[in-house]
Length: 475
Image (tube, helix red, strand yellow):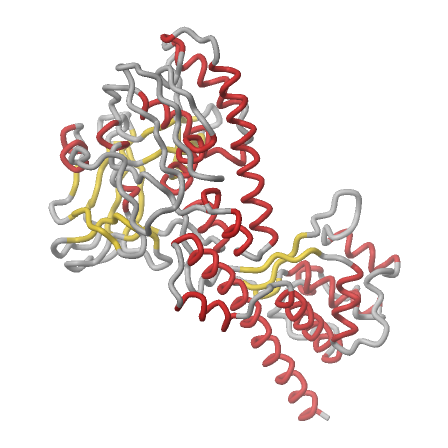
């Protein structure tokens, strides 16, 4: 999607939705040059900010929070009253909300960020919005792939992410038309965006602002005693950057004698002076971090590669691994029954399998390989499916079977590596030449994917050597 500016009619009762959509810098400017003081606003609204919490410019992630002095463990860092988070809630008496609600209902659930994004755009356009001190501090641009050039989207070199990026771009272009159709001929009082034109660029900005900053927290209590799951934007809290080893956590609690919910950030451990305040955004792969947040985690322990379980591909990989006559394309009925149990066969199978991440090899793939590389039905049926899927269950069907399964996975890794047009050394050389922010992110992303594949190959090669040495010792 190219950068675009909205056509702004000459009205005085709105704030412009002009959107610099293209990635222009690693630390993009805020929406307005001198936004209101966010910390003062939160305190004025009855919130709390620890005296040592300050906003700073982080060289990697843009704006972040840092401790200007030591903070003891379990200290409250930030407390937001219930009315401060920005949530998607409609006002039945507001004519503009009566239009934005049907629009949000057209958004698929998987793109929940767009639902809240519509509320964000609505508040951004409104003069005198309660949330303006927060919204004015949001970045003007985002480094997510929907704003990459076509060339940089191709530079990702990874089909599953390309599919997701293209799907989101298509949605935004189609949703732009739906929004335009709904908004045309509306009275000014009914227009949710103050009479302004809304295009794919501003919709993309809003969706990216939400996907990169919103948290899914408890909402209203339901009749069954549980709470609904509501995405909400948390002013100031959303400036905490990510770490898999966080020093802070989010809590929701009710104040004594007050039914309203408070949202807190609490120190998980002692925080030293100059330490950044860090939350764990989730144990996610780099696909999600880049797609939703606009960054890539080097050596991400949760990153993985997606493959399609395909009989012909498995046959090719196992033959390359030295298996004489694999039968992945034509399994025996008893093997097919196990594939069905693994949801790799049947009317609506889930053929997406992964390598890498904490599991190293997805259990369904490992179980399928062990079963289809065995001709011993009785031996296979001695074991529970959970054992056949477990990498920690060393060679349940024998050493030869285990070696053949591991070598097949190594061959699959070689095939997967071959789908990348460049090698890691080529990528490193390109980065040294100096490239744009989006090109750098695309190259970092594909380098990490290749590293995942190489790490799996190394790990399984060691396991094969160990198995063969044990077999030799036993013999």
